[in-house]
Image: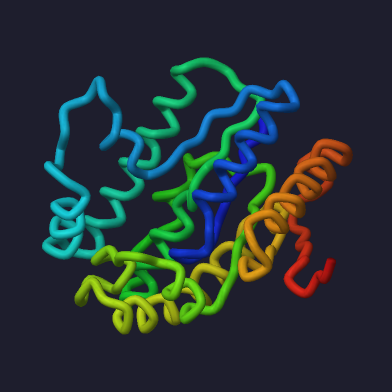
Length: 224
């Protein structure tokens, strides 16, 4: 099974790329499962912990950074367990993984996470990183969540200010991981990102994930 992480700050198009990859890979005959932090919250067989996503955001603001980190990791590991319990698949597409949430706490001024907390999380075969300036991603969004705005207020200016801190923290954290990172310029459009992501996955399949460890590929300046 290939574990494929789609990384990037908020508004870079992670969900759109995951949807496109899932459709393309399934069209090739591969089995695919998509995983996100909120899978347990949305699972129909489980009771609702929060009445709404807005309630979850208020909860995140009310607790400490340490509590938020444990909450994020609990939810994500639960989502991974649920996906594996559903049966084996060819590809696991993981939205953001733990990288964005730990980088988010760093952007908030905290760095409480010890390596042991994430030691049990499997290393992905490849990280596909979408990147764009915070002003660009803000213009794409129709509404803003409290956490992606730094737990200040859910508005454009707070979003841009927080994402400008999150973006370098996330990029640095991703590049510390022992796996291949493929950087995509998210301003090029969803179709180009999908094309480049599929090409990267083909290369990983041809050469093997182990041969791609600790390498970095950038198509950020590629022009069609």
